Length: 534
Image (cartoon, rainbow, N blue to C red):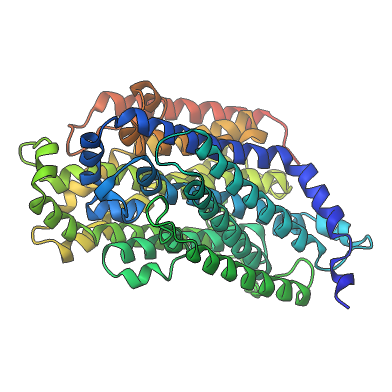
């Protein structure tokens, strides 16, 4: 009875693998490489028990708990518990991002660009394409689980036992499976790929924030987050498999709902109805900047709220952080005191680097929207009129730059507002602003490197995401993994002074601004001269 709905699913699976095998292989290789390098580096960095316990003390504070999760093996901080504590959550988020992008690519994006309509014109089942996408992504994540598990065991590092390592890999794979299902669900609800990705990333971001608050304050909240379930496995310590079974069951239920909704809706439409537009355009829509803003208004508002909540969630742990530093003599001795600064203010520098890089994400998305519109042939209607290419790209650039400033300020405001309620002596708002705005030149450089790619190499714009990921790796994890200094210098964020621990270095900030201006000019000039992709 149901067979006709899934007709030719196997052939579509083979087609998807043939089409994306390089993309999938690249994701798997990079995730495996990151995991293996990190595991090996831990053995080189901390060669005796004293060094490992010293770093364990720094990881006990509430801010680190909010970032990477609770440390279940801190009393005996060997390589296994250290890897799980510092890398499991971070890697799980990368796996979730991979799964989200691949699912939306093979479902809503293909439907949006007419490829599903072409396939459906052949004798295939109504549910074949979405089923094939689920099979491909589920298989990809199962393969990831196995290569991570056996890969860690093959290192023959003490403490990385086979059973434990397979659980580590399974935790990553099940996370990918769960968010594949969530992405497929939103591909049915949203009317376009941008909405499907946005909604799913909002779920991912919300899961991270809820887990952070729960791990620090109310443990029950952590059970409401799929990312919290990953950490409940307590890999390399107690090795609980049942949280993954719970997560897998949730994924299966979501897939069932997805198939039901897909069978109901019309091709090209979304379950959530699109809001009808106005009969007459406002003045804002009569210029390129207003149009760019209107096209991305929902995303801008969602990201703005998200950054405020992110800042507030980090700020909410500062009261516990202050008490932790006061009561921990060992950690107080390890962190060299700086005159005029509390230990909490010193810890602020790492937090600001993370917030700044997260704020870069929406700015890049808003800039890359121009390339997306070009690919779909929608900007042709603008350029045949009296609008120049320089003005069009400049409008998207202005929106990206302004959004970067706004997102950073909102995150800082949320951080300050939360710290004001939980700390006896709240951090100065001016201090928080000063520690944040020094990252603006780095954000601007990332935006203008995107402009440069759109101008010169429009088909390689995704490289900017790899560069942002590299920056996050070397800046966020560089201190823990003790990467060489030159690796940090390859990222613009590595040249930003760590205010308030360091004084503002106007020379390095000026260089970043000059490089940003140069990239902008070259990108605008090239965009003016080259042929359109459409």
